[in-house]
Length: 273
Image (cartoon, rainbow, N blue to C red):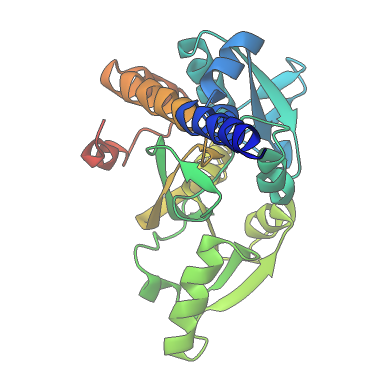
C-alpha cells in the first residue's frame, strides 16, 4: 500500500536534484545588468569631504571635483548616467550594503574596507604633503619640522605620520589637530602655524591661493579605489575595465591634470590594467 507514494516521493526528489537550484538562480550576479537596466549608476558621495575630491559648486549649482568627474566618465563608459547620492562618509558602507547605492567613489583607501566589499584597481594615489606660506624656507623632511607648529586634520593620514614621528622624537613637532581646515588655513596665513600636513589633493587645491605653496616630498602614498559589494562581480569587472581603458587612452591623465593632480601619478602605471 505504501509503494506508490514512496516511488512518487523518490521521483520528485530526483527531479529536484537534477533541476537547477532555485536558490542558486536567485543568487546569480545581476549587478551590472541591474545598473544597465536602470540606466543609472548610483554613486555615494559626501560633499563635506570638500575640494578637490567632491564638493558642491555654488557657481554651477552642481557637484564638482575630480572624483565626481571620474564617476561621470566611469558611468559614461558603462553607458549609464551617474547619479550622485549624498550620504555622510561614515554611513556609506552600510548604505552600499543595503543597496541604496551601487558604488562608493569618495576618498576610499585601498585596504580600508574588507568583507563584505571588494575594491577596484586604483584610480589615484594620494599622499601627505606640507603646505607652507609662500616665501618661507622650504620644509623638505620631517626633521625640518622639529620645533615647528604644524596643523593636521584629526585622525588623518598626516596626523598618523607626525604622531608616529613624535613618539620616537619626544614630541619634537608641535602638533595642532582639528577638524576645521579653514581655521588652520587662517592660522597658517597669520603665522600662528608654520605648516599644515594635508592630503596632497587638498594641499594642491589650496596652493592656488598665492599666499601658500606645497613643499617637501610625498609621504605615505595610498591608492584610492572604487568600492562595490563583494558579490557584485560583473559590476566590479566593468568598473575595472573602464578604469583600465581610461588610463590606456589617457583620459585619466587628462582629468587629473585638469585638477593639477597628475604629478607623482606615474607609479599608478605599475598596477595591472
